[in-house]
Image 1 (cartoon, rainbow, N blue to C red):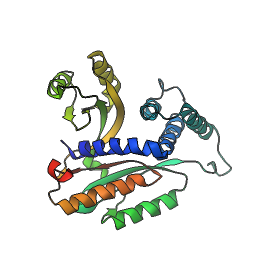
Image 2 (cartoon, helix red, strand yellow):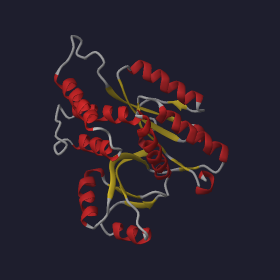
Image 3 (spheres, rainbow, N blue to C red):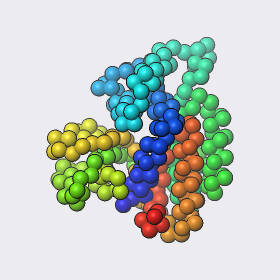
Length: 255
C-alpha cells in the first residue's frame, strides 16, 4: 500500500470527524467557490468537472444544501465582478505550497486564502516547527503525478473485488482498511467511475489527487510520528484544502 493510500485513509477518517465540528464545511465551501470562479462562473456540475468533484465531497459528508448554494453564489459573484484594483475585497485564491517535512519526505499543500501573505507566513512557520522547510514552486511537484482516485465500498471478499476492478483497465488498485482505492488517469475518471457503477460497485467518493511517483519508506517510529503529526497540523490549518506526501509507513508502525 502506497504512502498516499495510507494518508488518504487517515484523511477520510479525519474528514468525517471534522464534519461534526463544521471545519470541513468551510473548507469544502471554499473549494466549491474556487471551482465556480475557475470555471468562469459555470455553476452546473455537469459542465464544470472541478465543481462536480467538490459538490460530491460536500454531499458525501452531508453538507447542508444552503451551505453549498451559498458557496456557489460566492463563486459566481467573484467570477463576474472585480474591484477598482482588479480584485474584490476578501476574494479568495488558490496557492500551492511545496516543501520537505520530517525524514526528508516531499510535501505538497493546496490552500485557498483571502490573504496570501498571512497564509504563506503561517504555512512557513508550520513547516519550520514541524522539522521541515518550505521550498519554491516546482522544487517538489516533479515527484508527484496527477491521478484520479475513486473510493469503493468493500464487501466480504475484497480480493475478488480488486481482481474484478483491475479487469476494467484502471492504473492501480489498493485495499485500504476502510475501502478499496482505485487509481486512474485523471482524464478517465468519469469513464472509470461509470464502469465501476455498471459493474455493481458502490463508489463512495471521487477526487483528483497528486500521487507520489516513488515513496520514502519510514522505519523509525519517532520519525513516523513526526511525519503524521506534521501532516495533521497542516490539514488543521483553516486555509489548507489538501495535503500530499511521498512517505510510506509500515502497517506495524501505524498500529
